[in-house]
Image (cartoon, rainbow, N blue to C red; front, side, top):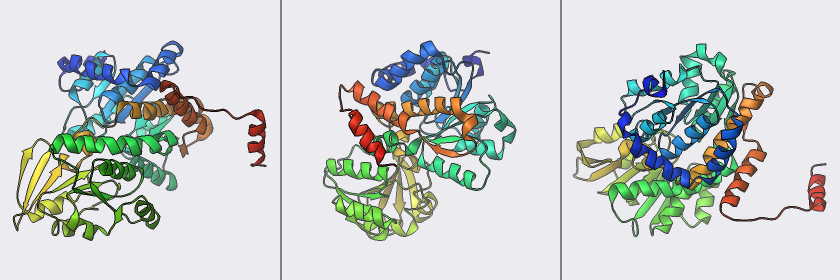
Length: 419
């Protein structure tokens, strides 16, 4: 069967629209384009089966197409029900990639798509949030024998992998791409920082300047969200449970408060913790009328939707991706994108140039695993620094930026530090 016959998507006739999105992304992804030119000739993944679970939009599609052009048999599914774009799925199928995904599937369909992806017996995996790897280790251990290893995109997914590793259950090597410098410094900070506000602004069509924004969590993503909120003219409050990150937020010029106090002041709330119920029932009771809630963490667990629904006397969709909850005293609280990733569920995700670096790391790390899996064993490993540095240099080249190189004397002097 060809990819059209094998795939499960909404409408293959949307392909031309998705192809335009992909072509635009390719125009702005210089590093992937450089790898594509090289790998079209070398075919480093010739005949290998690759399974991908990522937010399925145009930039992700470029990564899948790169691996397909590099000789792999690629199967892809979404990593979030609301971030899949049906026209992009259709374009990928037309390009020869097998796709099991559609926008807003039921929970049963979403799991079915993951299982169908695994049933292609992948040898290499790219995961986002850990759903593919988790299913392999729980329900489909019969397929583990085929897997050489893979890569993980997110903090959430890495936490799940580390848990498997600590318990001795992890069966193959996985590269923690999220922790690479060329990922967390840029994707998490500048990518999340911009795309979260892209999603909020296009969804609400409201001004940010003059409002109070509460950023819950001050990791790399939280730093980016706070920085961009400040740039848009907002007053920014940060809440944290880590005292060191709280000091950092304070020294970066933000007000640091406990969440219960921040809840009274905020106009817009953005969760970026990866943890559960960081906005919950006690906070809804003190929020202003018109408060807007958005999540930028991987799973829709950071905003306690169950408590919000219980406290509300009425709820309705008032605009695409905005649900209004009317509280008993008449206050209205607005939840964006059902509490899912606002930058992808209500936007197009990170800028293409940012994802160019991240997906180049994914591709190079996957090749590293493909070539070295036998020497690594079942463990979670960092991206080798030479790959991280290579991606950074490719990016600088694409921007026409030159930097210095150490002299031989300087290299020898630096080497002496480690003696």
